[in-house]
Length: 150
Image: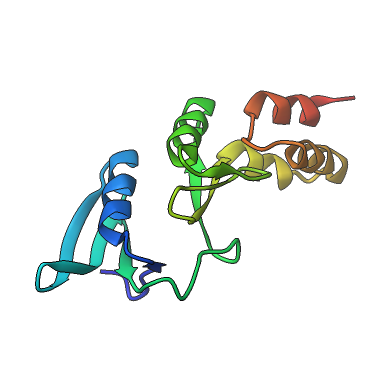
């Protein structure tokens, strides 16, 4: 168990959200459900090794961009798959951000974006950055095209 665990506050959909997230990410499972009688008030889940707690706390607080879950992707197929599943019932944002149907923000990012933006050539890195700013879902081909421009 990690010493630090992200804690996600839902109105009353913690169990539903936990099952939804576990259905999207491989090697994921619900670890424990905390109940008060028959009512679930907290769910501990593991998403591909990351432990999270989903909590039914009521409508007092909502998710914002100030906290998001960053998903590292190796391929465009991974980007497309996570994007489609998380965006269903939610909404697309800019620069790889997507808000799921529960209001939680995710960043679906191909590793190549991080690598290209860290290039030692600031002109190439800036072209990649500017290309990313024009995207909603990140497209690897367009990033590479921007990087390789003369």
